[in-house]
Image (cartoon, rainbow over all chains, first blue to last red; front, side, top):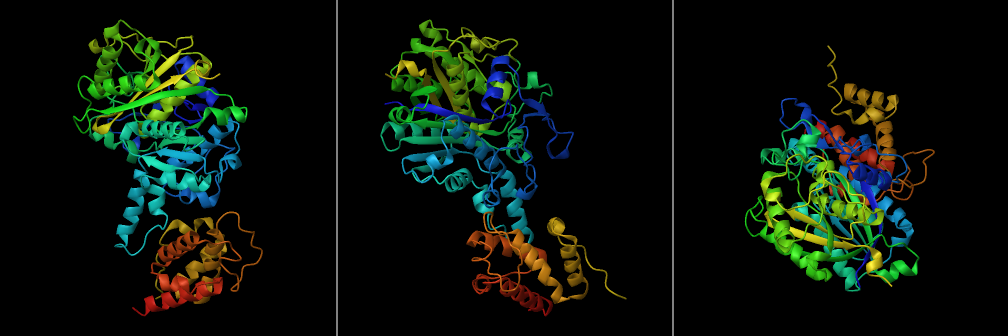
Length: 424
Length: 119
């Protein structure tokens, strides 16, 4: 039986709760702001998908603040990275949205935790610089658990007392899609009744600026021009941070406690390009196979897809590859499902991207709308045949295919469906 | 001519009451070890994990684990703070011998004496 999504939590550039995120998606309102990284006005990177309401810029947790209403005690904060603060807030929201108390998941061996983040580059740098300054004589005792990749798993499992599966995923911008996929598999296999999937990334120079040195970031200062997936003049992605959490449950578990199923996680698939370290296969070969595998896993033909949530980050090579791959799966069969790229509004949240997109799909299905491409001016030639609405489509999407791709050519795709199609 | 005290090595004491900062500066100025008591107590209270009972009166006999709710990570954090503040090294064996605030203060004084003796 396919698991159902019963809760979602959001700390994103376009809103820090479900209503505000949904409103931003419906209205095509972006969350990209002017930034000046490292106090250097000469840097070519002028904008980012910022996280509002938090101050976690300092490497010292004592300096941090976050929106009211979240419970983050001192003995938890001391081992957290900035993105761990976002993540705890997102998980608290997701549990509440699912109608669960933290005590419902604590010490329950049938609840698992699936995490994705790249760790904290800022804290790694700070802690190692501190250690080197005294030639190794001493260092922050919590430096490792607060900063390395895995910091989310360590901290969230202890804080929420998760005693089922606890694991982390590292596949760059496909990471949280992998986390979601393996959570789905464990639920299908009956290994767990409930899974919390969370992705998070920091919004600071240490995490985002290195992508500028790969020439992957947009140099545009106007947010509407900086992140414009599929546009013929796109010039790179806009870095962004935040956290998103989903609660998935076996359908029987959700039904037994009277929870409302928001969406069915109907299937997923993955395939790699096996091509370049950081560039997609020019025709999106791995992504195409991943889409086909996700559809096969869900038992749905391409004609059963009513909307495609594109990974499209606004990079020249990546968007082109994805447009071609989507065309091969759909256009060549005479199909034109609307394709939307929400990174135009949020920027690209790296490891977080997959589960954030999945949560947007949950809102689309539950709320009956399809995000468009509000920053798209002239579509690139590779997009010929694709249906790329500019504005939000005020109609139920039906079944959604959601794409993600990461460095090394990792491609992971998910299929989400309305609950009525699968239950009862 | 009295030596001008060097600046506080970090802003780490900024969050503590003024008298703690004054005590630290007294120690820095003239090596007055008795001034360390308020610094050690303030740090020990500050680094106790959340959830441990409020401390009305902390004294030399206050126990880090039983009275202040310390766990091993919090002890390591406290020790790191003191090491950084006083620019010294406290070993694992030293930590194992510390049970109370008094033990900790004695440990810091001993380490500082060794440091100033060039040991």
